[in-house]
Image (cartoon, rainbow, N blue to C red; front, side, top):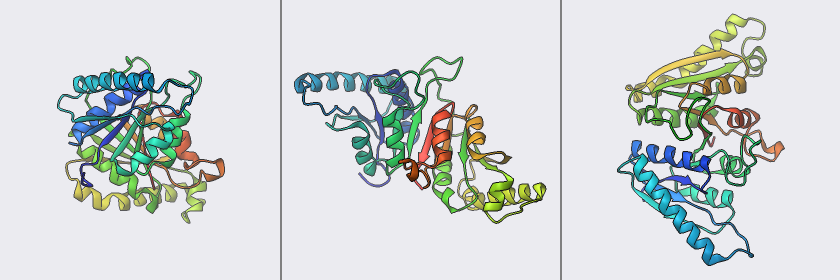
Length: 287
């Protein structure tokens, strides 16, 4: 495959969350004119009957292909069933993928947990963007999202770390005609001080945040004239701002950033909080 037709990977394990992720991935593959690779990772377990495990994996993947065909007619699907730990397999496969999509929890997830360990690990270490699909919002049937893609929210910092986030967000918006891109930057007086901006003048800090957003988006708006863009500097912490924005977004795009290593993760605290508490699909972009 060339670098332009690397697949969208959908990870499935038979759980409701993974089937919702499969639906999302199939539609996105068609929108981006990319192939879909449906992956079921067989668990490493010496006590398991390998023949039975292979048979179950084949049945699950065949059912997933049929579902993808129904969800996104014309999708080009292939399957893979590696024997590995789920997050390790997905991180390895992400080296040759455009996008990895998985549910927020798998079959082994506790109902009380908002984010499963495999989802967190994959989003923390993958080499390409990872989309974690949370369950249906209140009042929505699981898997009932239609193909309308109205708003994409991109959470950015006022520095070069947001380059990858903006590239992915603009590309995604361009793949969905009619989508509106909301570029959100949460700022506080403390964050303004840390970035060398105004410290005591709230109006000046707000103006500085707005100027930073204009500078970040200037070149991309010319490259993607078909994308409607809204710039939203918001006075508030970044994590709270993004979680709130996710309630009305089809997709929330965030940067993985550095800073979570002290927690044993590859996610910054803002990315971790957003990924855990968002009310819709979240794309985590390496940066």
